Image (tube, rainbow, N blue to C red; front, side, top):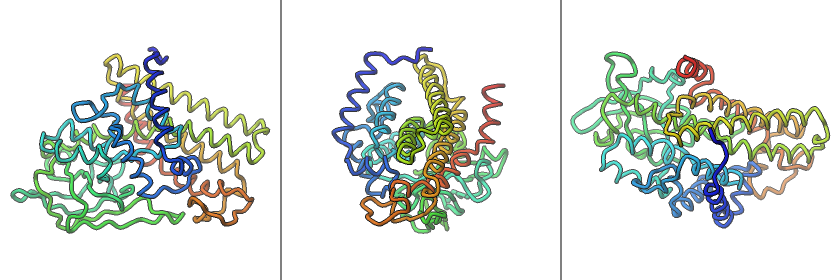
Length: 393
């Protein structure tokens, strides 16, 4: 296992860093570095800049219009964009559904769906979780009934992240009740403007809308929107979730937020507190350890081994680190981290904030929001069972 980057990889890093410095809008990096709210237009603007360069599908092979980067190059790209303060690429299109379409879709579906994902023009949403079917996803009940050249879909999806912005949606639906629950699931994509699709935002405790309920009432979807074979969707879902859980680890964002934690602790006079600095040091050790784990995955990929068995472990450690750095920021801010002034999370806000430090305003919202990380994408309790079975034996 060689964790050192080659001269060619270092040169690649420098090229990415220079391009990002020149093309990342300053107002976007300011928002990201200070945890200010990003609008749909903000996220779409960066996606289209990457799309024009051919880098939105940064993990794609050349045959599908991607740059054909190695696993290490992809990691370096993610690291440089995160540290520069670029908005995180919304993963549902380029990182999650695109690999499924590439691997299991037909040539017509490649031609139909991939260009809009690669350009950043089409926003995709994910339809997996349902009320009562989260980590136990195989128990899902949203039904798709085949009638001629159409599927009629009825049911509900929930916790659909940023679904209020979605143009298209990929869904796991039940097409058979025979055999094991996993054997009767299919993978279908649909236009969210189709009659019968209703998106109902779920307002969170901080007043923001990040997740949604999505209802399907006799939604007619052309049979040509079925990806792969009918009743084989569980196989495709596992393929997708391996990408999602690796993405959830998000070690590069953790490195950026670690630096933000240090800035806040200095600002609030806690940097000279040895005990608090110890907590930052322990977090930094965990971040470095997670990075080493990610690099082990990359090393395995370079040598042709299958690294995805530990995707669950990456998810567990990454999500716990996200919760820890949001907690330490709250502790650093003290009483001034508690008030929830939503207007203070908007760029350019000029009002007064308790303590005079407006950059503390997003901390409470971020802290509570990060409680989700050990639940979504398969709860950490379930992930530990998977790791025990597939890795430890």
